[in-house]
Length: 214
Image 1 (cartoon, rainbow, N blue to C red):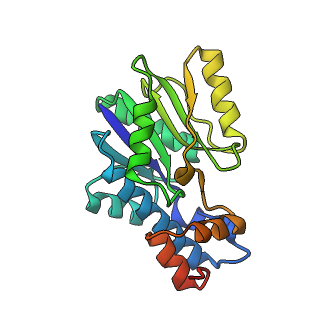
Image 2: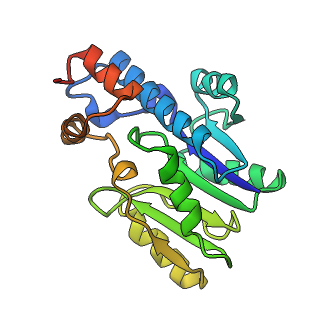
Image 3: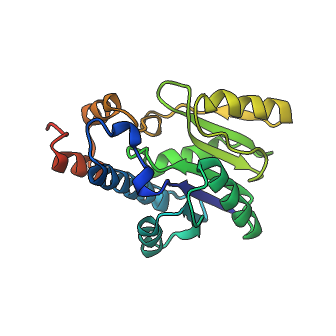
């Protein structure tokens, strides 16, 4: 079975690098809007059998459940990689063969982007990586079998993922996709997101905050 796994931080810990321009309540609202966009794209993807969400945030868990996604409560913030590890083990126990992990802060992602990631997976399995815009981070990692390598989200994760695959003898493919490449971490990302334009929850939220300029 093929699963999409959305990994989301607890809202009050999300988007701390935007603190210079957004107070805590607005950062929480922005993070929730991005999560809703990623969840909608994931639920629209044709290639997956199920969508699951791992987070310790009760509000995001409730949102995911009401949308029909499976939920994995990590109970307290363990860090992204530990949360994905916990969720991956749970999904493997549920029969997952392939798990495509998507970060919750890439609001331009569309269902067809996720389908393209699954389509890029070789028949014999391996790892497909979708890099961030600066080619240093990893915004999506698809693994088949699901536990073939651990995730290494964080600084320079693309190189670390590729190194792990090489040392484990696992085939890896880097798939560049424009929409999922844009994660919203710093002010320049918001400007780029606004330049692209989109009919998203995130766009509406930025407009409400007075950051979006139509």
